[in-house]
Image (cartoon, rainbow, N blue to C red; front, side, top):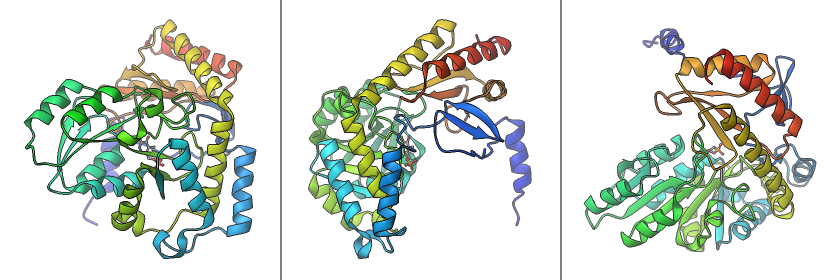
Amino acid sequence: MSRDFKQEIKNLETRHLRRQLRIVESPSDTTIIIEGRQFISMASNNYLGLANHPAVNRAAIEAIEQWGVGAGAARLISGTMTPHHQLEQDLAQFKQVEAALTFGTGYTTNLGLIPALIDRDGFILADRYCHASLIEACRLAKAKLRVFHHNDVEHLENLLKKREKAWPTLVVTEGVFSMDGDLAPLPELLALCRQHEATLVIDDAHGTGVMGENGRGTIEHFGLNPQDLIQMGTLSKAIGTSGGYVAGPASLKDYLINTSKAFIYTTAQPPAIAGASSTAIRIIQREPARRERLRTNRNDLHASLTGMGFQLADSQSPILPIIVKSPERALEMSQALYEAGVYVPAIRPPTVPKHSSRLRLTVSSEHTQEQLENVVRSLQEAGQTLRVI
Ligand SMILES: *Cc1c(COP(=O)(O)O)cnc(C)c1O
């Protein structure tokens, strides 16, 4: 091996950018066990407590008993079983679109979607804060790619005006941004796309189940018509399972089945995961109280943190990032909280831009008031000791 991996890891270490896996010894919940110790977890995307919900678990167990563990083949061969078909119908109904198509993960959904929509003759404009999977997907598409300043409609408009008229164009953004928790200005983006004959594609990984009256996502939050854009999302955040999907016109689904490599050349999702996802989507629709509890918890914690003087990103969601700038400081804060029994990850470059390292807290509907008070106390102590507040 000509590359010195040890040296490369050392280089990361000295810049406080080395990352390591932590083994969690318990299911995803508001408390988790690490190294035999119990922590309050502010570190999962399990917003509605569905990742380890008894009814969702039972649906998976029953589906395993009926359908087995593996799908045995790719979707187009013999891997599309009744639970996959049912889940796609449930997703289409939930998202109020004609059709949905599921993929193995959210990451591969983006890899399968964007290059199927556009090729080297096209033009993609992506928000600077788009998730790594979207950026990878845009590169894979080989279209001309330009990045617009985060949520900057004016900058986007300038780039659209400069484009060659003949170029088919996608505008790519997120509903709820995963590292900042803010929302894309979808109504303005949609109007601009209409005006300039571009197609708007949104990644609603963090909006689904969370935003909107019925949890249908960021499109519902803004009162937009889901027929006017293309959306993808994940089953791995609020829905609590695993996988991703595209929701849109039936013709798009048909087209993706025929052209999307990340859909065609991979084994179908395990049927039990599809079955569990259908049950989770039903719970999301049947139990709006979960979303209300999530909102209350989020608003309470947001008020406490800003009240104490923490500098928060401009979040409008259960993602509450405390910006501490340097990666070293973010690690120190995370470590101090760890010692206090609160688990919050330090998010550093390249996941976020330089000088914007942060503690990223995510709130769940299942956090108790007592747990959140404990988190606030620990944050205040750590913040004062380390002079973040
Ligand atoms: C988590 C996430 C993904 C990837 O989804 P997985 O199901 O975890 O692969 C894609 N886009 C965004 C914005 C995400 O936050």
